[in-house]
Amino acid sequence: QQSHKQGYVVSIMGRRRNLPNIHSPDWAVRMQAERQAVNFVVQGSAADLCKMAMITIFDTVSSSDMFSARFPNTDHKT
Image 1 (cartoon, rainbow, N blue to C red):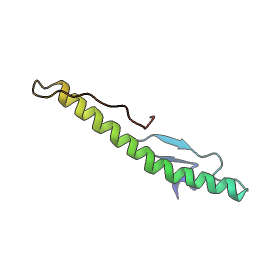
Image 2 (image 1 turned 90 degrees about the vertical axis):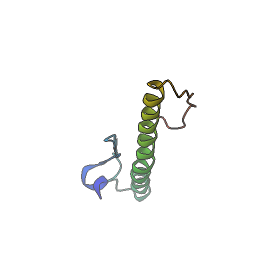
Image 3 (image 1 turned 60 degrees about the vertical axis):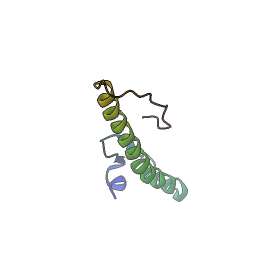
Image 4 (image 1 turned 180 degrees about the vertical axis):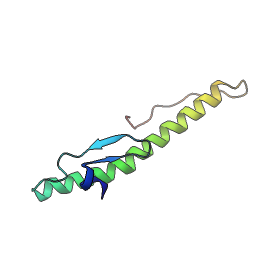
């Protein structure tokens, strides 16, 4: 697994999450780091895709005279 070899994971858009405890001798601490690795890839990539979609929609709407829209706040902090 990438997280064990490199000590970090990367989202689909290249954002990186360091995992300093991935090689911890403490089993519980190591398992927490492994969960963080999986969760970051899934949730971070989802946030990246949402942000890309919002940018695309905003660019399309703002350059068009036919459309208008307002954007709600999102839950992802990126």
